[in-house]
Image (cartoon, rainbow over all chains, first blue to last red; front, side):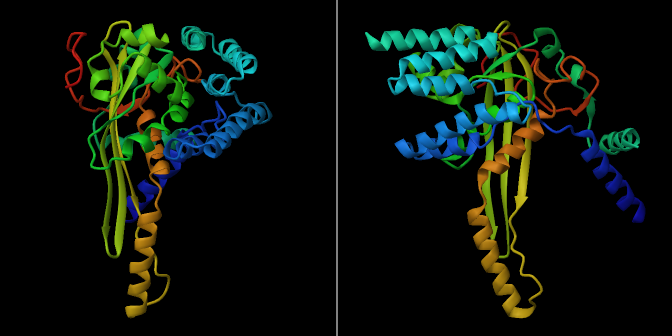
Length: 118
Length: 234
């Protein structure tokens, strides 16, 4: 009985010791504000989510973490939808610079945007 | 000390199921080296209608922490609509290669929510989330990784030290409150994190290309993995 307990406690310690903390990207309150926006789409929930995106960009470097994939793109996309073309495009460029593998995706967003303008 | 504990842990884990290395489990991940992943809206086989919406907001975070580039959900949804793809069933019929055209994605992640249950029995309650993942290469169309797992959270009330009827009543009430208030999002997040411990790490992870020998529990595929490329999940 005591032996089982000992093995379990060792396994538990091992479990804690083996798992590196995930500190690669800083996500802040992303999933909860996105979730709130999806469940109740409104200007308020969208502006809260935009604040989260800006907060991630501001705090990630302070926390010595990276801005996650898609955050610049998502913010830029929202700005484009709001008609803020100049700033929106800037954030799309930031995404491309941070993640060169996003080039096809970013081009697609730009193409759809200019198609929508016509 | 830590090493000993880890060895003991793996010995301990060996007792519970079949464990094989990540490389044995998903050899094509180390050949294909996907970097960009597009996550499609999940298929919902649970009885909860809201499960899909809840679930999809929790996936990007753990998947990027595993080292992958993940496209943001809202933009993905809009692009899929531009391609005339509104429901998950239609998307399953699209060859994985197409998603490379749409997004530049190296791989497509298909999620299936198998269970999304609240069980509530007067003095005890629990919330269970069970999900299956399937990752397909947009280069070959083949399944390059899959996994499934479940997370259950006990929401039983704690009546403190009260005994007798008063204690029982307190327990009934706290169980009801806790089960109703338990948010699925953190549970879904735990399920993701548990499942993603088994994915070979992507380029942004420190252990990229060095985790082949890490052992993971061997899972059965929802469908044969060895099949030829064009087969979609049915």
